[in-house]
Amino acid sequence: MSNAYKDHLGRPIVAVTGMGVITSLGQGLEDNWSALTGGVSGVRKITRFPTDGLNTRISGMVDFIEVPVANSVERSYAMARETTLEALAQAGLSGDFNGPLFLAAPPIEPEWSARFELADRSPPSTQPGDAYNRFLTAMREKADPAFHEAVLFGAISERLADRFGTRGLPVTLSTACASGATAIQLGVEAIRQGRTDRALTVATDGSVSAEALIRFALLSALSTQNDPPEKASKPFTKDRDGFVIAEGAATLVLESLEAAVARGARVYGILKGCGEKADLFHRTRSSPDGGPAIATIRAALADAGIDEGGIGYINAHGTSTPENDKMEYLSMSAVFGEHLPSIPVSSNKSMIGHTLTAAGAVEAVFSIQTMLTGTLPPTINYQNPDPAIVLDVVPNVKRSQQVSAVLSNSFGFGGQNASLVMTAEPA
Image 1 (cartoon, rainbow, N blue to C red):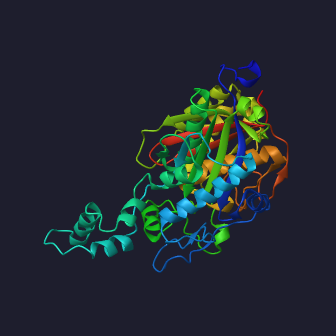
Image 2: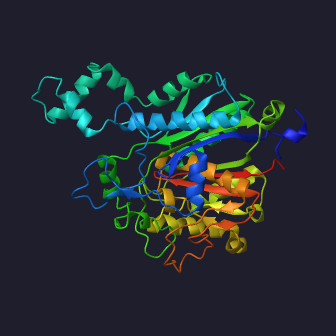
């Protein structure tokens, strides 16, 4: 391999040759980018299920894709399929993909209505928790084989593997809000280690349901500013009160730069560095001193061979929760120091909400688009700045500015942190 195709550590350079995305803003990269840079919000009132009595009644849902059965598994698969079709078309690839699949997917769990419906097929018992025990019995007996297969954790990746002809055992992973970035990192590592010339990295989450809404609400994690819905997500502001739960998916085709050039593929960006660190502070909260997040960002920069002054834009995790936004600011301040005031930092979540499992990949796609177009997406709803968080958040309106290196942060529940460094050019 020529040195032109190796990074600073002598590893194969990893290129992005195809991208696809779906969010509440629409289907496809073109429509999403137009809306995102136009400051449009995809957050709206929930109509999928009744919200009477719930404190949160808004979401960034994807309800415009038809699915055969209205459940989170089918929604997640349908979005993953559509974004993969778009990414492969952009990459100019057809036929079997002939490379590994790394999928970030939400934990598969049947909704309560489906559990009770299946439980009704089993005879009543005298055991405590009768309905749940009957549901478990029905699952063990596979009373509904199609339902049983649909709720297996690997079901979505198996279907994608069959549809697109990926090679080897498809990997399904779940590292909370860092999942999308983790899937990309696994693809990067597979190529760097010489195990493959290309990898399909997919992240999807169609799991917004009444149960999911209630669970996050019990953690006091969701915004309750329901009216108007589009104003609820307001990262880095003084009056932020929680994130807006959302759905979406993204696919990136990764190839070694040498293989991409050899087949004449267009290179949209370079996956230059990846960093990850665990946070043992709490089951859901991040360490308030930002220690693990600081280590994650520094690891990504070191992996990329870029110093603090080399980053031109940061795509923040920026959830709009009081604690997480403060922690992310502290971590960025610790890493970038005097450089931070001159680095634009914006949050896509102000417009699309928090796409959970898919967030890291969705935001990686938007980060590459930022470099390709020379346009920085805004952070909308930035009307009341938090005086304790001093950042250039590209407030409310997009900005024309060419950048050649982007950092994208994903800090997840359970202490799972990942950061990606992407560049426009290999060097």
